[in-house]
Image (cartoon, rainbow over all chains, first blue to last red; front, side, top):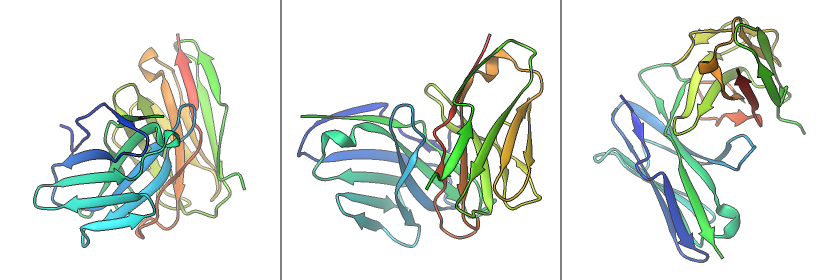
Length: 114
Length: 114
């Protein structure tokens, strides 16, 4: 059973507009949430994270929102740029289990059109 | 600064052959991980090593063995390769596991088993 779901396999937006990527999780014991970006033929690279004690974290054009009651995580990219086109994975850490293990969603392919 | 280096980048094996995937990191990280990525499946943890001298099973360990050779190196071995193990394999490392440090990934090994 999937503990982390990214329900949109793909998303297409225009350059300059907002991109919103979503992630839902099932376990309230998850305490740390991350977003990774992956270009073809490269490994995932860390983008931004948020602890469960916060509901928002910002880093430049990237903002992550956490709604614990809804068990929902989202990544906002504003403004979107063509170089943001990549697969985005959300990942979660279980505070009740090993602190070393992350569980990843299946990813969302973002395409930013010029 | 190389980060996480994986060798080889590509490999084709026949069913039943054995193979060792190599991973080395130069960031003085304590924890290291092996993942596989299959189409539409996200990243799934095979094995991890929280620190030098320890290894533990992840989500999909069957058919694999690992060795934490030293602090820098963590290898993944397929003793008798099967077509179901055709995948892209990623190695990752992170600083002390219980802190909120993101995992850093290599660029992957693309493995095909015929």
